[in-house]
Length: 253
Image (cartoon, rainbow, N blue to C red):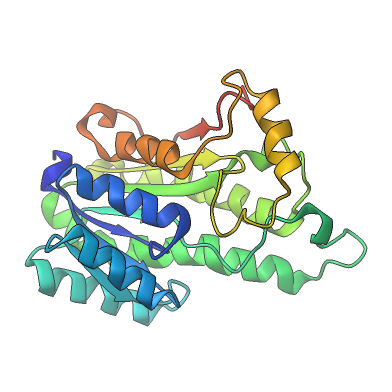
């Protein structure tokens, strides 16, 4: 299925990276569902900007019933089931190394919040998408990960553990869903310049990371979105269960 034939749902698309991903799909002619939890004004403004092929819909991805309703509303509006899901929604988190939870004080509740957002959220969207994807014998699931579990330059224990679990889910789902024509992959970035989540990062950290990459730059949300498009496109049709690190070459393994 070509990109301009797809109905794409991007979670957490009202702002930051999700917004860039939604714009990238819309630029390719896809119909786009802009999911949001609290960023109503930004999500609706983005939908207005992108035109009739975009729709802003609220849902908390950790709520399975709300996600089922989200997919039903998307299908009712566009007249067909969602073909492509990008799991981008992030539980409340700030990439501020100075303010991060330390090993002697971090609580299980911190881990639980991140697992709810990353793993439970992705499970809910995949389960809601499966009936429609199976009727089409086509589906694309792209999960947003991080390079921090390969290179924990800043030890965000809770966030990193949840994303590592999401990679495991990516690979196990790929094995189960491949016979249905559904691929499941992950795109992992490092620090992005700049999103709401990375806005608390000191400029000196961005400069340090840029100097450590072969490209001498920090990846932007727009550049990251390009890789998401690849996993949704026909050019990745034989690729599933993979994790593509998009960070300017900072992590190479």
